[in-house]
Image 1 (cartoon, helix red, strand yellow):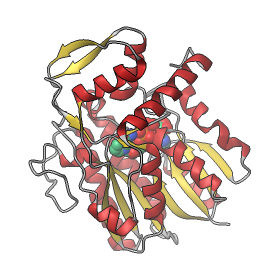
Image 2: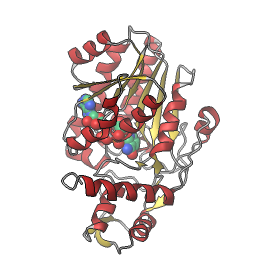
Image 3: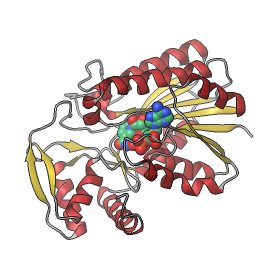
Length: 323
Ligand code: NAD
């Protein structure tokens, strides 16, 4: 049986995707370097259920390591690659931009080099809403100009889209770039706003509150993102870009109020200036994905927040040292 290679499969999005792929009886090879961007034990926990499946193989290694990647392709018959491994996040990319370039661009190219003489039916590249920067036009659509990046992270994702296009064109690798819009849900990365706010409000600690509360994000629930990725696997285009968002932006103040109400505690706001590199709002035009991927986000924001908080309360009890 041919296998699907998932890079970064122990992370937030990757582990949910693998849950689903394994439930569909697919064979999955996961590679991840389990780096310490956040606690590696969280990633080990994310993949724990996958280890029960014979159709699942895990290899710890780095996408920048050519010999490692070559060995993976030599060992397995891989016909699909879902490339999620990356250094993620806008703010941390300002701290170490060279690392972001190294992993997100060079790492992607190492993978592409190994794929170019293989029979790959589909390559999925995890791009980001960050490529829209401070786009004036709302909502953001795939045909908008995205030539002016305002963060190192956004720049690496835009460059990633360019380089995967080049390989798709030269070596006939059918490719889909998915621009994810702020994904949330159980196992979300701990440095992301929802995770941080829930933690701090529960602990009665101040939360960093940037600007006047009117910035907005198009929060998209993890299950909807996984559905979008699975649909993208079935497409037949040579190259296509899709927004995967919720198309219902939520203001920062509304986010804080919703979390406070669900938890039943007041938020203590620590007012701060808007960080460099942050965009004012994200808002996805999802009409292309609706039309061609049959993508329809189903989880309403309030419902998703309740699910996240329920998950968080449980893991906090089970693994107090990690959360
Ligand atoms: P994550 O950090 O939870 O997952 C990424 C995984 O990749 C981690 O497990 C990490 O250990 C692994 N990894 C990182 N560098 C690696 C390397 N050099 N070699 C091998 N493995 C490596 O992040 P996530 O939120 O699940 O994001 C997954 C992808 O989606 C990323 O490409 C990210 O940029 C993109 N994305 C995420 C969001 C979001 O809101 N979560 C939004 C837009 C785009």
